[in-house]
Length: 285
Image 1 (cartoon, rainbow, N blue to C red):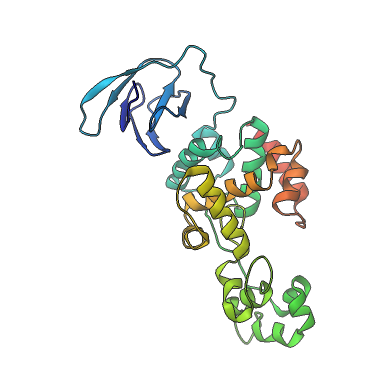
Image 2: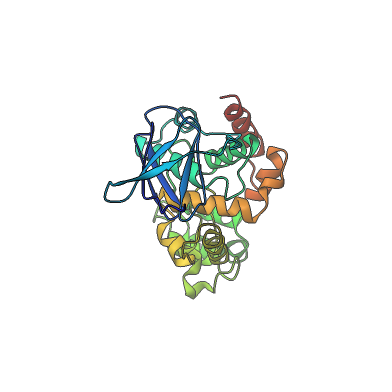
């Protein structure tokens, strides 16, 4: 029998299953994973599940097959809180459920994958787990040191950079620094600032936003384009999904050490050692 499951009640307090999205509140630690059977079913390690429809009517039970495998890794809220020590309870909760729901589909399937992914997130956005946009508050000197276009046009760096006389013009900086690359249009297009760094892996450039939208759509079935990604990049959902999409699309899952992962996420960063420290700390939790 194929059941179109909407509500499931077990030893888990409640679980709402819509499309491929799972949202659940735990009363105890259980291994739970989703599989396809019709629209959606849920496998629970310990017992049969009583299945209810949207109106609350009992429609049957589902027993996990005897050969059901427990997941190799299962991120806990406790571990997440020890990594992102200044994050709000809501950010931790949202990140936790979205991660558990999607990790397998985006090829985060081993303990190494999980720890390496979380180490990169910590390095990119910090312990508060806020999906921030790129800070473009540069001085003239730092603009010339960082971006070729400002190095070649030093008068622009004085115009746009932060000085004692004026604050940084971050819109101009984004548009100038990222124009005509990473899938962006020219300076006048405004793409550089619009598609500046964002999300848990600081996705940058219209081309990358577009590609991650395609990967999210291919993986989850949800219709997503670069405009959706950009407009929602500061949310936990899109901040995390865009990072997972980048992980999958850049084959980070093929790496066997943290330096390899770092090179795929942020090749020219000066934080290789810091990310390695983060990884080993997270792996010890």
